[in-house]
Length: 321
Image (cartoon, rainbow, N blue to C red; front, side, top):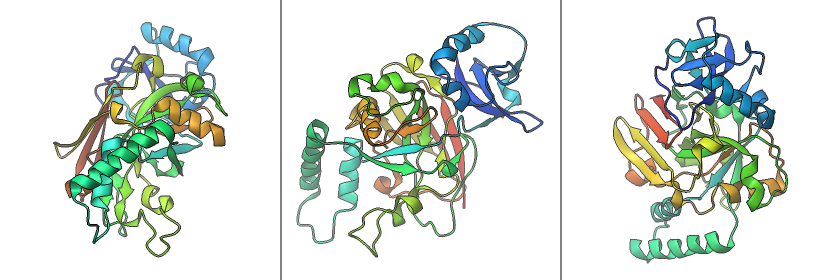
């Protein structure tokens, strides 16, 4: 049970259940929740997003009201806020994070000093930002779990790591949209922790193939999501939000989104050139610096992760092996 809602703006959306176990789309305002199904609006948050242009003014009016049907947030369980059809995940999208990874993964016998590797990688990332395109792969909805649920590490995973990320939520279908128009298709933002099995990121048996995103990213519970969907107009400019993650109270990630190589608009536009983005789809914008691999401290049984992004609330997940 969650006792406090903290997010930007007057309201947010989420998925909840009460004592009867029935899940429903809820409008969150302060520390109370309105069942949108029983209010005759929509049974799921994805259904809300499919009518976002029509419903968002009505949701704002409901949040400001004091009618019947509200339940205390403390009496409800908070689930992942949405069940998306598609998940698009951005890799290598924070300058400092990529530099740290290149240092950590440099080959034995590389004659360059750490400073030389950092300088060369930094120059490459600056060139990417100016002339390149984002690197995006596809995730599975079955990896999603709730913002306060356990993250279960399978027995084969020896190097589980965290990656807290700002996540854009699509509210209007997007296909081949321009960078200038891309944000018109983003309805809300939320938080995702893109858990990664570091030891299987690269296919060592087939190095020419590259990365194995299926195994390293998509085990059940490997994507804690939420707690809420916060409307984009309440979040405002995403160019300088703080992304922070602690493990057992120690801060490991604490970075601004201004370190992104490609911002939200460029990511959404780029993805839409190949795929058709649908309401409720997620665009994970990449992990900032401070992952466990960098610190030499990976996740272990009993760890508690707390992750927050400015204006989007906080998720809290216990690690279970």
